[in-house]
Figure 1 (cartoon, chains in turn brown, green):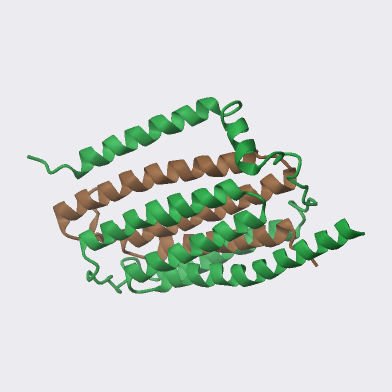
Figure 2: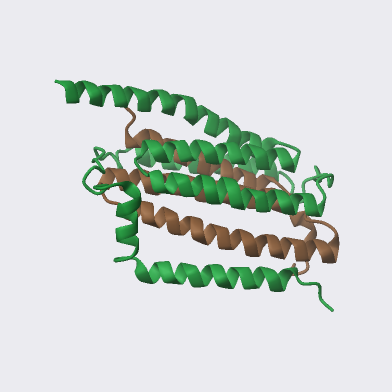
Length: 101
Length: 179
């Protein structure tokens, strides 16, 4: 018995669904960010599985670029969170409602 | 005869590593979402990233596995923990729901998403036989990635560099105390 691409893709789907649930459930903005990271990593696992399935390295390069963009996103996102915390002394996503109509 | 036996042995090793790492990855991800304490969430996420690095090694992506450990488990999670400590870990999360019935709805929706993806998998959309990366990884995975990164993806690579510089400058501007 060997591990086919289906097992990796199933695992990737499970991790992605957990990340989605976390983003929808959690109120702490930093934990919401971590769940977004989990989703990005789940998609990276799919990319690398498909790279192996297709026998080419393009998927791996794409996963590498996803990591670069995720790093940039985390830097800016956490900067925004620190700025919000300075203004409002809270990082709950419920307290950020100034744009509410 | 010997190469066949060797292939089976490596496949068995892959199976064992997968069986160990896959439940660990799922459990740490669930723990990350369910843990009340944000620091526990961050540490569980680090474990999850290490599991994913293990999968990348199984899938013949050694370079991405190393980058996963160094950049994600190292740099990004340290940044997360740093901000977590900076903003105060003791801030308790509000248990009251802002929108009524949001949590059950969220669980139901993500389960629906999972069922949809698994349905696509079961329907055999991605039912390809795994090819081997032996040809593409000729002379080492890192060398092969380097070759492809600096020929076909040069422009994307340069753009990624610009993006990182812009992100660093943006973080500095955001973090600066307004006079």
